[in-house]
Image 1: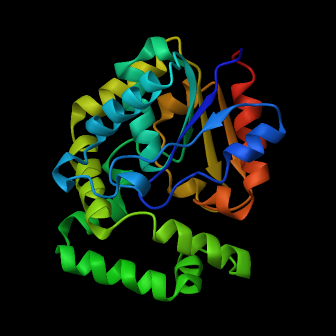
Image 2: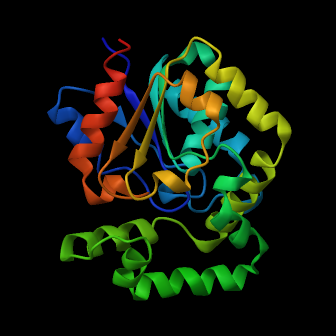
Length: 247
């Protein structure tokens, strides 16, 4: 049996709509909620750190007797995926980093959120939910009825406390020189790492030159940072094109 895909979502929302699209193509994919999201919304914000998310995913896999996976991490999930691959290299067949954080340069929004008062984050999230079309427009996605519904599901998948705790951990982890050193070590290792970015957002992704040189592949997809919302089928096809190289 080929290793399944493990989809790791970012700061807001989830990737739960994607596994059925993988299934149509004959592949198994899982999209578990991270701590503080979905069924885990009641998690203590103090426990919501990137290292704890790695441990959370390892436990999730252990409970299902899943030994090895093809990691797919989007945005903050990309940072979590790289930390997971460093902690459990024997469990990772390949890694698709989808505009994941390489350094603080990729954490401009997390830096802003980390400095806010909790009430400010709550007001911001409430505002997005009251005007999902406006949120989509802010990230340059053309609104539609279906995308509005998707936006509401993503925005309602976590409380403001989770968003802020995650943002603070992103800042803390990626500010460390040891973080980028560990990522470089990963790129120098045996795990194939594929980089995926949106055409509109690729220039805002601060990929080190060595990562470009060592990546197993680099793919640019139509759309922006939330390319999987704009064209989920295209996103799944790109991930599978990368992942099916490593069986």
